[in-house]
Length: 111
Length: 115
Image 1 (cartoon, each protein chain N blue to C red):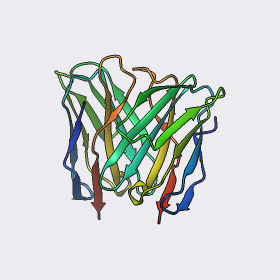
Image 2: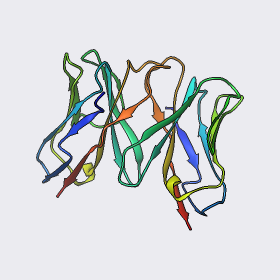
Image 3: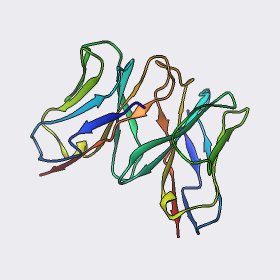
Image 4: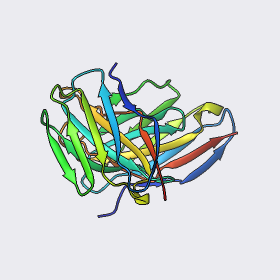
């Protein structure tokens, strides 16, 4: 079945440093979504990408969908303590409605 | 609009018992999905319901079941609880679950502890 892996599993940065998490699917995706889960909270939708090579920005966050639509990345510039949490990618294969979540990357930011 | 509501928030059960969790989706959302979250396994998909029918199913044993009512509210049942069923169970609703309309809006979850 479809597998979606994220690397790294965990990253600890100092405030102000940049951070990137990578999402890799075993199959071609029709779309990619990103979610953030704060400690003790539930996943919250951040963004959706659907086009090959698409890049979207939300303030300090930059999201990219690979040309082959099998990978994606989330880059945070100048991290802040409010960025702490686990970031998940999720995607669909073809027109199937089942959304497969990635393994997640936990980000810790310290002053 | 009210968000996704899950009840109860916390549950403590013993092995062998059964449990029912409830989820009320966002008004107008017709698709409800259930996920199990554990520290070691991340977010594991259980099943998705749309129009009272199970449309997708994850790789969980038959002890895990669910249903959806005509008002889109959903329930999930776990029978013969095992210690390994201890987890956070998350419900998420979306417009209709199809690609492009399947942004997941999660509830706060039900934390189940099996003793």
